Every structure is written in C-alpha cells, then in structure tokens.
Amino acid sequence: MFIDSHSHLFAIEDSKIDMADIEKALVFSYDVANFDLALDYCKKHEKCACGLGIYPEFALNYDQNAENFIKAHRHDIVAIGEIGLDSTFPNYSKQIEAFLGQIALAKELNLPISVHLRNLEDYQHFFDLFKRDVPCVLHAFHGDMNIAKRAIDLGCYISFSGNLTYKRNVLLREVAKIVPDAQLLIETDSPSMLPAGLNRGEKNVPQNIVFTAKTLATVRGVELSDICLLTSENAKKVFKLEG
Image (tube, rainbow, N blue to C red; front, side, top):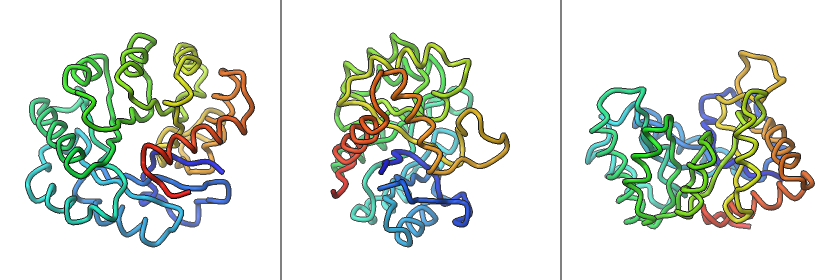
C-alpha cells in the first residue's frame, strides 16, 4: 500500500482513479480558486488528505484573505502546498513574498510545506530563503547531485515522481541512489508527470505510482516492498498521518 505524497486528484474524473494499492494520497491545491475543490475532494474520499497553498504562477493571489481561509481550515489540512518558486513565471518578487509568507504560516500552524522549484535559479533562491523552520518536501524533485546534497543537508524530504522513469533522466536516477532512507518519498503529481511507457496524453493517476517505485527500487538495489514501506513511513511522519 503506497502513499502518494503529492497529487491534484480533484482535476481527474473519479472513474479513472483506482485507489486499491494506495493507502493515502496527499491532494494539494495550487490557487485560491481550487481551495474548496481540494477540501471537498478530501472530505469525500477517506484515503485522501488535503494541503492548501498557492503555486508560484498564482502568487499574486496570496493575500490576507487566502491566509485567513487556510487558518480557518487548519484542522482539515496536513500541509501548506503547493508553494514554491518558478522563474518561468513573472512577478518573481511577489513569488518570494508569497513563498516566505506561506512558510511563516506553516510555522504558525505547525505544518510541513510541499515545494515546487523549477530551475537552478529557483533552487538557489530556495537555499537562500529556507531556514529549516518547518518540515519541507521538495516535490517532483529534478535537481542535480549538488542540489540534492544541499537539500539533504537542510533536512528536506526528496520526493520522486514519474520523471524518474524517463530514459533521458540518467543523472536523476544517480541522485535517487544517494537520498537517505529517512528523507525519501514518492508521488505521482497526478494528473501530471505520467511515467514512461504509458500512453501520452493520458492523465496520470495514483495507481501509476508503482512505476516510479519500481524504478526507485531498481536504482537503489532494494525490493519494491522496501520502497513501499520506507516511503509510506516517511510520509506518515512528515504529514503526521494516522497509521
């Protein structure tokens, strides 16, 4: 039974989702426009837990109203996310402001953060800004070895998604070998990050987590069951999940 540490399942038709092998799926918002969607989805699906936050593309929408909404739903969520930095979007100064604001909010509410970073510039700004105030998950990790080592030294959890399975990502699979057991997570980032070998154009779904898990088991030289147990225990710890 896997724990999918990052998804946006409210963006997928329920009929396409098979949760038979999923113990829990973390469902994250990415803008105020889908705060209610994420919350409602998790209330309807007992295998899901919710995170609320604003993605860098929508950083301009992070204001006092958004913060107050999150605070009002503190007991309905297990994380602040998806938040982060992305230099492919404009208003970078506002992104930084929103990122720091949401870290402070996570600290106030005693919650972990799930972080999106795109480029080397974004990772560098992250290292300049993050002060280990809260538990941090770097979701859909795609940094190089130096970035990984710095993140590991900061105590961050490293979460691998379907991009780990892509043929071109040889160096990412090398990175996957060195992440300490205690800081390793897996995810689907559904409906994005479809693993290799599946039909292009399909929406990614939680059951596809097994493809990432198999790749991770192969590169680390362990059994699939070891990856399942290890990452599930880590997810329970960082997100304070029951079980």
